[in-house]
Length: 519
Image 1 (spheres, one colour):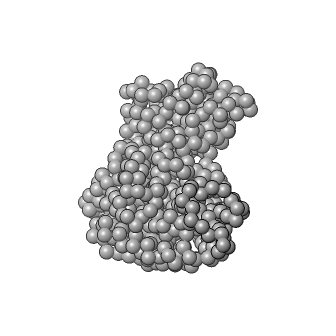
Image 2 (cartoon, helix red, strand yellow):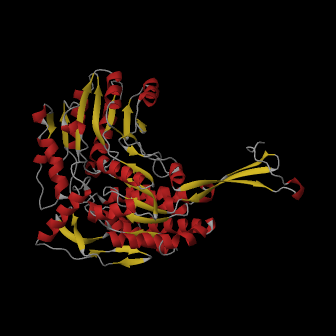
């Protein structure tokens, strides 16, 4: 879900070099959180920007392999005690942490906005979606129930129980620094595991804040640890034998690397990758409603969402009137610092992201596309990482602007002649995270959800992110692994089944029988 142009290691090295050379410097150092307390000691650091100003606001420690191993060992030491903790006490902690985060949402939202750049209302919305999973996990007594079968054979009962997998590594992306950690760590902890969380080094403070909120709620030391870092930290988590499971959200190349490396070391793994979400607009659709949805879903959070709509598929003669409506709406958007209540969209996360996103727009016409709205031409005061929103027409497969995940405020329009052509286009794409269809016809809607090969589908809903009672995840190269994120499937991922067969025979029934057991 992050860019596919550079590896995490290369990005971290570039950012570190920039920070070292940046004369503006930085003040606060963001430390790790290990075994219930802040933990320093790292020699390497990376800059954390305020994207709205372009200034390096803080430095974050980058953990060595040894420091990551220390966090893993703290999690392993806490595992036995946490696993033995009653479900009633775990539930009470979940309720407490939900109350803490809900009551202090403005504080956490300010942290998210300061380091990510998204507007405050968007940051608060992200936190609210994360809290849905915390609320879901307060029902952990129900989610962790096993099964019992009496008299499976004569005098024999069988029951199945769920037990935690052990120490879990959670590696989260920059675009949702509060929501995705809450999706992962809350379920893992509720299920009785201990966790080492490695957030993005670009906006890491939210994860430390959340870890301290859990500690305030009564979570014992060592159950939740936070280490900051780059590929060095990631590789230690993927290869450390004490880590039994890995959850990841990021770009497809890195997701595949995470999956293959973790599996090669015998770990359970779920790795969510990139996206290219298509929104089909049928000729019978409400075009004003579709235009509103396209603008909201494409440009919210500066397009830095794995569920952002990046391609509108205009069926039949809908393209021209739809583009006209979208163009009218984007001209009224207010782009500015996330702390300004008037801002509807903030900056991109880093200068590298700004350069990369603008590069897709500037190169589109050379590939045969038409740039209807060129956001790269919009001027902004100051040194923030701002760009305007862009709208590109006549986009086709084979163009970089179509084939690659842009992860910025760029909306492409692909024109097709029929519903069947739209379905073939989407089903042939390597990404299959989310999609939507806008139509007034129930038959078309039903056919679309049946025909389309994508993990999450919206019917007149542009961003079909499920509520906490369902699970989140795509298909194809948008997901490596067998289970989706948060919700019911997440409890399956973070637990192992154990089958127990019980018999209480009379002493007189004991005998030697070398045959295969039967009923």
